[in-house]
Amino acid sequence: MSSIELINPKAESVRRAAALQVNTTGAMGLANVVKGNLGPRGTLKMLVDGSGQIKMTKDGKVLLSEMQIQNPTAAMIARTAVAQDDQVGDGTTSVVLLVGELLKQADRYISEGVHPSVIGEGFDIAKKDALAFLDTFKRPSTLDRATLINVAHTSLATKLNAALAQQLSPAVVDAVLTIRQAAPPKDAKDQWREPIDLHMVEIMKMQHGTALETQLVRGLVLDHGARHPDMPKRVENAYILTLNVSLEYEKTEVNSGFFYSSAEQREKLVESERRFTDEKVKKIVELKNLVCDQAVNSKEKKKGFVVINQKGIDPLSLDILAKNGILALRRAKRRNMERLQLICGGTAENSVDELTPDVLGWAGLVYEQTLGEEKFTFVDEVRNPKSATLLIRGPNAHTIQQIQDALRDGLRAVKNAIEDEALVPGAGAFEVACAAHLVGVTKKNAKGRTKMGVQAFADALLIIPKTLAQNGGFDVQDVLVALQ
Image (cartoon, rainbow, N blue to C red; front, side, top):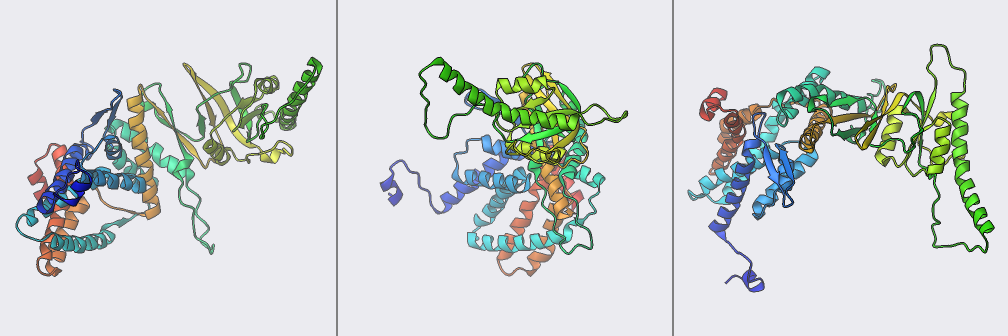
């Protein structure tokens, strides 16, 4: 009896060959589960949780995150693949297949008497040479819009149908190019450019219409509307005031109370509380009157005014704003407040005491759209947006979630291509070329039995083109011979 079993009688303990077999079996089993997902011809998996909720996906990250994996080795591989997705945005299925095949190829040589440490040493040599070969294999690119659309399509086509991937590819590229910071002048000493922040692309879901109606909005879509029936539903030539100011009665920060002995005293207390909030609203109305009552050219549209507040606005304040023709939105998300400044200009104010026209942004059109019980507010027709919204439409939650997962991967693929300024041919091209390089060059330079580890690594790389061919309905051996 092992020592671990003395500590925990329910523990399972395996050693040497049995432990290796458990690890290899777990890795190969996980690879077989996700194998059918790889590539544009891969199949969807349907996941059903304990409560009966259904999720359909080809995304390796979603699949591995939702699965309940018992084998410890398989669970570790799944975590590695999810980390790959977090860092790069794609490649989870490929990672699982590659790890599973590496262990499978290693098991062949170990069963013939080769020590695992020898195989591991060969793997290290092959890995270093493969990374060096990747630097020579990648293709520097000017990365014009047409090339980036191909990059986006390569990612989207593995998770969506062909027609939808074709339509969404330009939208994904335009979204990334919109938020990309302008390059510094060539004569500038500091040529550093801020990295692309994909959080500035809002992904908004709208369960309405078909998936082909998914579109890029060069502006912002908010998932709520005005809270007063008399507020305008459509505002053109609109000044945008973004606030982080409470326009409602709030309790004191300390646990305090007031005592009054008559109804008159209570009325005075309520009146003073109300006056405090009304003065804030009055300053907003004064700013609106200042900018909107200015002379308007005959060709210029009538000016409108929109308030978007991160905090609350009480009904009485909403009523005052509505009477003055102001469209007001309350409790906007903090991230949307950042996006609003990038889209419309202006600055977010934490106080209404010193409001000036300089703090205002501008949008050509702000309008509200109602779908059943839900309201959406569109901030559109802006001058020079530095943020954008991908508006996902679909008939049901499954379709919308599938498109959302695909768009996130597509955005990161385009971002990586722009920042790396290089591309690698896909469809298994690198894996076949790298395997040939390892066998033809690296294996010859390796010494002794480490050649077997290099050969195992090279054979494992071929699992990617083999799986792509198999999922596409082709003969695996014929395709591989033709490629080589």
